[in-house]
Image (cartoon, rainbow, N blue to C red; front, side):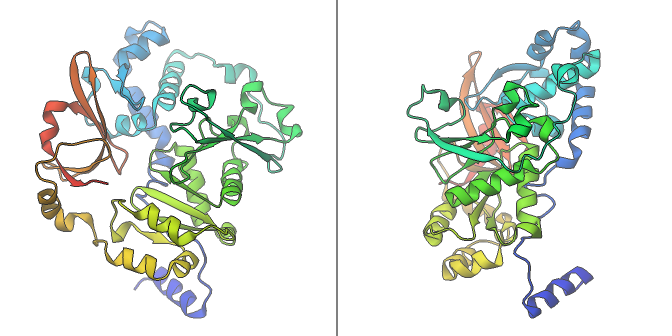
Length: 380
């Protein structure tokens, strides 16, 4: 037993265990955040030839990198870039908008272009944004409404973050438009535009999420978040400062965070949340108070899990043998043993392709005829 384990054991005996939970270094809330600049450089090096051939035209450069988008608006790279490169895989998993921003940043650096941010918005906003208000919810009534731009499901909600006047008076109109969205299923929460760049470093993202948790009782989020939001979750889950505000459960691909004073039926929400989720014991982290509240509901669920998914892969393959891959399936690649989620299948330029994402943020796009390499090990 090392020194850290001894300290934790002593705290447990003395009854002073903090409400925070330990987050593995390879968790989706910590994965690769601090290495973003390295990723950007590695991708820039990979795209040197395309930068040169663009002749200083960003559209030409972008179109030489991206050949299209799948049904989830995830970029599809040009044929010569469809390689198993972890830097590209990670950034593509961030989605269309973030990948476009990355490409423009690389392009601007290469050609020495001053962006609008450099020219007109160079000064950090000098204010305390913590006294903000949450306005809403605003509901997406149908798929054609403006709200559906941010919300994938009818009935989802948008909350507007109204910042203090001392902040907004120094901001552009675009910077003032800060929103949080909540999907109707599992209170999945998103931050489409993120915190305005000139307000970063003030913990505004963390404060907004804490206030959202307080407002709606609990939130959940999947692995497909931006690096900035993963930093927010890491702060909320591991900072002792917030131990009196929240209690949480972290599993392999998702997190659920409850307000400590919520009147919601926590057991009911927990049981619905974990139903059908693919995880294992080694990936589970839970706050002590939440574990106590859940009691046997948590214990029985946890004991039903395997220590790690590799223990019975062959049995899982046999269980789903003969079934065709479909969106949402968890699969294993037979040649590497890597586990992926199936994002969907679509046709592009007359050829069918399938997109998969691993729990390490690796995005894989392959011709549909190669899907025999993957075997289903879990279906909701």
